[in-house]
Amino acid sequence: MDQLLVALDVDTAAEARALANTLRGLVGGFKIGSRLFTSQGPSIVEELAGRGDRVFLDLKFHDIPNTVAGAVAAGTRLGAWMINVHASGGAAMMRAARKAADEESARRSRPRPLLVAVTVLTSLNDQALFEVGITPDAAEQVARLAALAQATGLDGVVASPKEIAVIRRRCGKSFAIVTPGIRGAADLKSDQDRTMSAQDALAEGATYLVVGRPIIAAADPRAAAEKLVMECRAAKTS
Ligand code: C5P
Image (cartoon, rainbow, N blue to C red; front, side):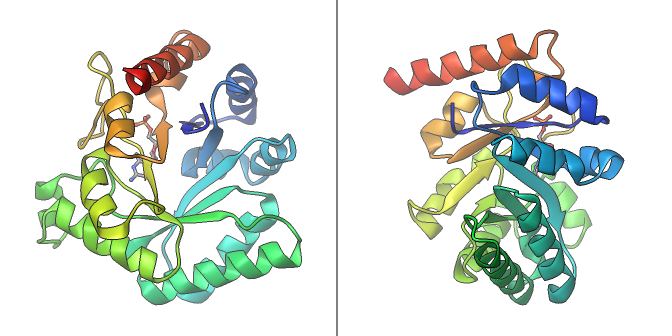
């Protein structure tokens, strides 16, 4: 299922490789975030991308524009298919990221990576936002940041499935919405707060689903992914 991206939130390249080998062909790509990247470095990104896997480099860059541009260019050189930045880094930072991705991919004659912006982390609720001084509620803050990301030329956003409707209204049909925080009724929510089932997120209009622990922490990750894919297909045809 092309829309399903699995978060390889593990410590070693061996574990990541084993998960990718188990899930390849069934899922649409693999997300490499700060945990695996910090422990194993960029070689695992290059390795999977070199095998033809779609790799979402989830390092959520948030820094001054020049630094983020350099990091996005480096991710583009690694062969990442999708890269993200924090929308709250501001318009100039997002424009610099866009320019870097476009120029570096053109220089290397390879497809330009999708560039998406994190709006509000799916682990944060309204109370947690208030504590860090953000007074609009999560939905309003997400809509504002999504509109800003779109205006600066980004391809989409990362947001909770609960905010898909508000983003679709504000940004239209072709703007990509990547949604973590996917949980079935039987799954543990863990640290995620604004969650939804995979079927409901697709019905709301998610472009891509990011699923970590419900698949990678299952006793049989392939069986867990197959079950989720089957449930999504059944929901689509019903
Ligand atoms: O294990 P779980 O399904 O909660 O994994 C979700 C993944 O998506 C994690 O790798 C997390 O870092 C990432 N993510 C998120 N919320 C965001 C952006 C990324 O949960 N807003």
